[in-house]
Image (cartoon, rainbow, N blue to C red; front, top):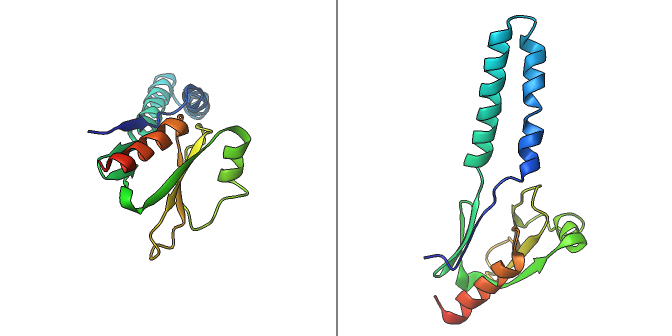
Length: 149
């Protein structure tokens, strides 16, 4: 049972942005056929929304491991977690970013958490993960490490 779980759902403005596919599709299909244009526009919009929802990754702190999307990290290889908000998060995603880091970033989620790795054989220095509540994520990892769960 996870001690922390967060699904990185898209922000509402993403659906508004995707809705721009409707007028673009209508511009292409209206000269051909109005009915076909409307049907294709609605199906395309629904498909884009469905893909966005279906591909939203999950972050979990489970007994003995951290899961971020499809990746799994044993807690014994985690040497700490830091939470970043606002300008600090922007710097972590940009100027301070190590090219060797493993990333699970979503552009519609500003805060990030950096999970430092302690495996000397792993060239990856840390994971950088988008999360709406990086402080709660860091606390859950720390609790899991302390309790050995």
